[in-house]
Each structure stands twice: as structure tokens, then as C-alpha cells.
Length: 90
Image 1 (cartoon, rainbow, N blue to C red):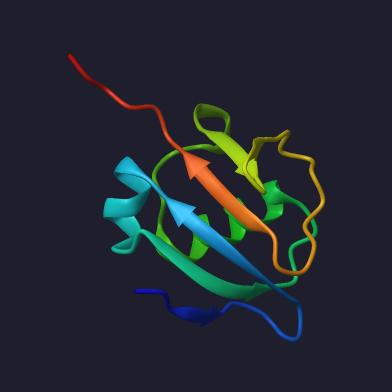
Image 2 (spheres, rainbow, N blue to C red):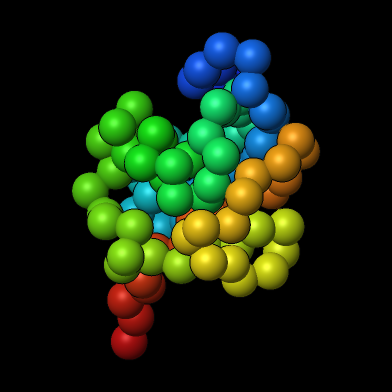
């Protein structure tokens, strides 16, 4: 189930997918939201402040439109952002 969350003004709409701990902390696997953030780092910091994510951005990977990305990548309308925290296993 997708939820449209309005984080800020008349920005761009992006889809965000969450995994592992971030999925647990957000309580959703994915959502579409509006943001004025210009980079994936700004978006993560915005979401971290809103949802209380405990992980620093430096400890997770990010993908933009199904490609691993640098935190400085610019966001555009309809982008898909995936935040991928470390996964423990055994």
C-alpha cells in the first residue's frame, strides 16, 4: 500500500522504498511523497528528521532509479529512491 506524504510545499513527487531497519522504523515498505529536497542526501535527512531514522546516511547505500547512486545525485520528478541499510545475516 502506498501512501502519499506531503513533506514540503510544491516540490517534486518521488517514490521511496525502505528495507530492513528503515522499513521497521517507517512502518511502510514504500511511499510516494512530495519534497523540496534537491539531492538524495537532503531527502534522507528530511525523512530522518520526520521519521526518526536511527542510521546515519554514511552507513547505508542508496539507489536512484534502480542504479546505485552517490549521495549528491540530484532528484527529479517521479524518481524512485531506495535506501538500503546494512543487513545482518547468518
